[in-house]
Amino acid sequence: MDNIKSIVENADENSLVLLDELGAGTDPGEGSALAMAIIEYFSEHKVLNLTTTHYPELKIFADQNDFAINASMEFDVKSLRPTYKLLMGIPGQSNALTISRRLGLRKEILDKAESYVDPQDQKLNELIKGLVSQRADLSAKQVSLKNSLDQAKIKNQQLELQLASIDKQANEKILEAKNEANRIIAKTKDESKKIIDQIRRERLQNGRQGGRNEQELQRLAHGLDKLRQDGSLEKNKVLKKAKYNKALKIGQDVMVTPYHQVGTIIDKISNNQWQVQLGILKVNVDQDQLERISDAESKKIHQQTQTKASTRVVKNSSKSVSGHIDLRGERYEQAMIDLDRYLDQAVLNNLGTIEIIHGKGSGALRQGVTQMLRSDRRVKSHQFANPNGAGDGATIVELR
Image 1 (cartoon, rainbow, N blue to C red):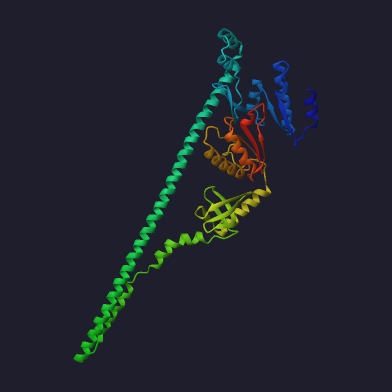
Image 2 (cartoon, rainbow, N blue to C red; image 1 turned 180 degrees about the vertical axis):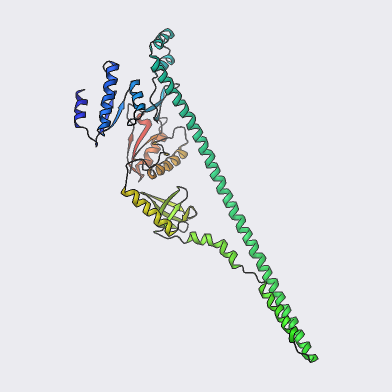
């Protein structure tokens, strides 16, 4: 309490206060009441604080007040192991009786202990257990929906390629038909000219003038010219889109389709590959994954970026990217690919610190992760997790 007294007197809105088992070591009723009062005081004085507790009263207190939020680390009671997953919005459940039962403590002791548990505490524990179960179901459904969405995107891309191929073939057929028609017309016009010349010669030999019949013959000849087909339009349709995207240049704003992000071209790597600046990240992208955007749209995006910068709020830019990735159970090559992709997503979503769960096992995956992080420009620092937690089964990474 002497330490807490000093913290209360010195903490301000620029402080981060960490309190472990606040109010423990005394009567639970008084301890929880004191803990709630201290937390409320910090909130009123805009002091950010993180408090760990086993008191059910504090769990209810956090749920009933907007300035606080519950969170817990998931624990698998079947395997008696932590999962290293942070559950936001869900308080931790008490597992003392469950673990004791799995360890084989006498049934009569457990039955007696359960009869001593406050009914309200038991009800709260059951409620938390239900929330954890619902969250697991939702996570499984989310994974299933994401897989379905990914498959739909792949199918859509395949259909677009097929449609483009069909469109190209159709335009080529039309162009071929028009060229054939022009060839026939040219041949017919040449033959008609010979016939007209012959008719003129016969009239001259017979002493007659052309008159109206001559004009009609000339009109028929000119009518053949009107039948000629212009193939330039079809050529333009086929080449227009390719020509538009080929006119890429350094300094131009483009849409990077794999990331759904707008970036700026900063270098040309090869004829079919460009280097693009996405925020603080530089990525090499194939030309067919870039889409030009109009000057008006580019200007609008820059204006929105400047507006956001002038009213900056320190907040995670996306809730869709988790703060950790679990590589356990994956093959080495796939794990490295998934980690590289996850680092891109974490940087693009402004995540400052992430956790990579690789387990201990034979140590090959852990060593591969460490080697990759040492040479990765996206990584500022990295170290194994706290020995009291995952230890060298997980790595904590600070991103640039």
